[in-house]
Structures are given as structure tokens and as C-alpha cells.
Image 1 (cartoon, rainbow, N blue to C red):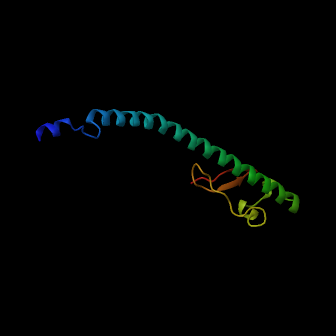
Image 2 (cartoon, rainbow, N blue to C red):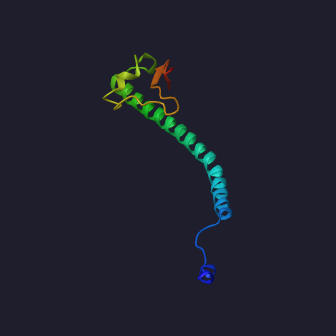
Image 3 (cartoon, rainbow, N blue to C red):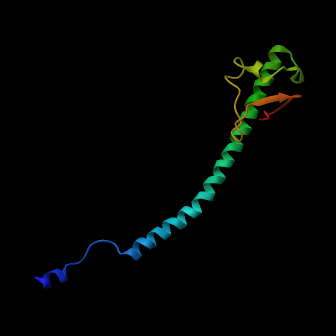
Length: 109
């Protein structure tokens, strides 16, 4: 009976094989994480630029409708709800945008 047990092959992975697989996965994760962080910051910048362009378009429509100069606008809130659904928030800082001296910029927190 002992002879039969010695001939059976054991199924499964050795500890060395598992460590090698884990090391390969760790290297792949170490390479992927910095790239994902760069993609996120790039997307935040693109969203910010799109928000500024949207606000500038709404301001242009507001000025054409009311005949008001940009430096005479009281606040960006006057664009809501006719020209903007809501004042967008800055994706990089979370603050709303403002118009100061005719310049669209993120609000100071």
C-alpha cells in the first residue's frame, strides 16, 4: 500500500511558484499606478478647461442678450439658470468659479 502512495503525483503549486507569481504581479502594479495618477491629473485639467470655456460661452450669450460689459457683471450667479444649469465646480480644487475684473477663475477657498 505504501508503494501506491509514492507513485501518486501531488497537485498544486509550490511555494516558490506562488512567490514568483506574486512578484510579477507586484511589478505590474508598481508600473501601472503612476500612469493612472498621471491620467487622472490630465483629466482634471481638461475638465477645468472645458468648464472655463462653457462659462465664457455663457458670459458671451449673457452680454449679447443684456448689453452688459463683462467687467460690469455682478456675479457668475446671474448666469444661472438661463445660461448655465449650475455654476460648475473646479475638479482640481472643488471650488466654484467666479468672474473677477472680467476674468473667469476658480473661487478662492
